[in-house]
Image (spheres, rainbow, N blue to C red):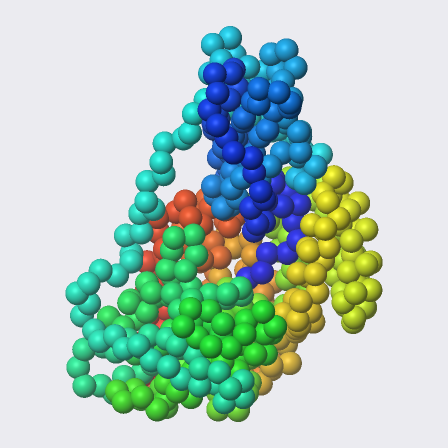
Length: 469
């Protein structure tokens, strides 16, 4: 699910393209070379790598890597040695780092200041040890006890083909079947994220339990055709409906026992499909949205900031800025004037960040997807859903708050007179249904578990009683 605009704990770093950096030739000077350390933020401290070059004449040159955010070679605006202290400035990030060099020249001890916050940062000379490959014990390993087919199907409305993988249990069948629908952002068929493959794990589990499973690349992603950049939730709904229609025609599948399982935005799409013509036989919403897009984005920001340890006053200022930005978007239908009104708001909240960067941020928030999502309210559709529904959320989900969203789903389905509804909060699980500590997205890749076994069992047991009727 889309993470709303945030300026906290270096969040501006995420997703930025690398900038041109100077060559770092090792020289016999006190600071030349590589330095590494961990920024002591309250939650999920990131590892930083600083490269420093001392020229024979002229100022120092320095650049930053943040491996966890895939940032490399981000040049500092200036780097200066004052007696035994190093001063690094980044106008782009709003950063000032002042540190003192140890007597043996092997350590820099100082404080990293960014956008009104500051944290200790100790840098050690040299590069960190190479990271070990992430452990993902739930990834399926061949040989698999079921059949796997590579398939393609067409969205007749969009005119593009989608590519996916269909897994079928051993035996003749026919089998009940499910389509997996991914969350927001360009996703492949495995919903790959932070070294995890949640949909591959889910498909493996369900196929072993006797269900045919179709998962597919989003339009414009992987082997699928179409364009992702201009698509909205309505377009992704059309793709999911095409997948549902395709799966009903496959040999070995019970056409009247085909349902949808969606995660995050995909969970919302599964519920919307339940109100459309030719609805699924059953629906599983995993961290799907029940409230409006605007309400979700505001709550998402508040929950992420709280979990990050930001003080109440700063979080309040950011919430007011976010509210103002969303109001501009919703009251200004044309992008150029909307962006012109948004940039000053962003500049006030993020002093020191170049206007070009703020303009890019504003443009992202006025994309077709964002505008559609902001105005989306699932309630009218929920009031028409008659299919059995299982709706799950983790109690540590900071992207889709479990309480208000599950309650909104419950209320909407009650309005439909739907009595076959199971709603459950799963203790200690995050947005990806991993057993988590903070629930923050920065923690996803640090957790070896891809999908909680207890959550998988709940899904499998519910399907066993609802997909085989």
